[in-house]
Image 1: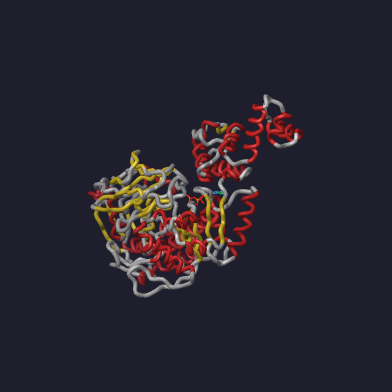
Image 2: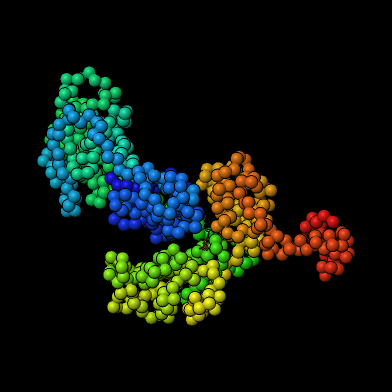
Length: 608
Ligand SMILES: Nc1ncnc2c1ncn2[C@@H]1O[C@H](COP(=O)(O)OP(=O)(O)OP(=O)(O)O)[C@@H](O)[C@H]1O
């Protein structure tokens, strides 16, 4: 049983992330994080959880929005059992395995027989290894056939439970799974009306799961208790527990109960053999289930996050350019303000390229300490610097034959830039501390929200690299310059978060929409997404009102935007005030005809 983080709220609600004390677990939006969140507040590399000196610790890795432990903002914190870690709207609770005292009534049970479940791979192929009663061979043969026919986990376990009920003399047979918190709960019991009578012994489960041992126990103290009401009884005369071991992990426990003494040896052997068959069949069924879920999740994720919404003229042009650049083979530079959608654009380029079937790795150069950037990107040999405890295969090698997305490329050190240039020119490079050069075939898509030309002037960025990278340059326009796209995005995120937060009937008032259209969105699409996300949570039915948006930033109004219509309106208004409402004089001042002035006054509904 391992320590894990369970997600209590946010987009990943219900997921469990097991923690490995041997390695740091990164949390964030980045696709390389062991604990990957889709919460928009989360940075790509937001925080790291690691085990040190017998305790779990959390360190914030310079996230933009901070990390909270038990409600307190924390750079570093020791996390005890049940500690709650919050990133944006995502809350994760640390669950340590329970070390409980033997709380059940095993004192009067005696172990009649125990068999170590054999974990050797070749033994797995022989699930009937210990079977002495050949009478059961035929039963197991027909069971194997029916298990082979089905990929459905429920069908598979039902067949095994029914066979055991028929052939072993058991009065009840059940199957239990770890319910996610280290406790085993009955999942299926036959006959179903005995489900309440099945009480799992925690100490036996611990022994069976921990040691991989099948156990047959008996409580001979109740031998004479023939009048007991079985459905209400918590005591069984005999019980058999069989671990379902897939070879990699425990899938569950099979348990058989008998009212009267007693099982015989053949029953026990049948249960062990059936358990082995069930483990193989279940692991196959679960793999096929998880593949289905994963492909659904990927399809869903792409639908949710990879679609570039926008039909404004600037976005239409950008999409056209993406299609052309995607087909080409050179490196690409994506420029744009923070949160404007550069990563989404990079993904669109990748999807349209002929490398779409290979991986795209994403590295945020700003999230890696400057001193480690080079070794992370290009790899290092064990011992090449303090802290290099093992060889590291760099990101470039990992992305070989695929695509590497280098976000915030402006943060790359000058040494790193020199190596990157060599790679882009098709030369091999030397990992840190290595003696042999490595040649890779990687398409680089870089992104920045900095003015790289200015960096070049300041000698912070190599000019030759700048020109090499910007052969194909894609500029993502800020949201405030995308006209009607704001409304499209509002509707898109509203739909998305209504579904996510289960608020299907929530509407948007006209005033709220106007406020959203008027706002200048300094944080671009990311800010808009976050605003709608929290408004959907905060609003009272039936409509989101302007105050639910939490846009208190008064300095950033539509008058700070670059929208021509806003400026026209403002200028006409000013001219009219200067000419005390005379349209004739105002038109002269503005250098437009009187007819145009009248048309615009009426169009913009300007008071004279
Ligand atoms: N055109 C769009 N359509 C739909 N969603 C978008 C669009 N543009 C951006 N987003 C969403 O806005 C958020 C920010 O986008 P993204 O991470 O691509 O921005 P960025 O420019 O790379 O940000 P940063 O500068 O911080 O790296 C993401 O949740 C993304 O899915």
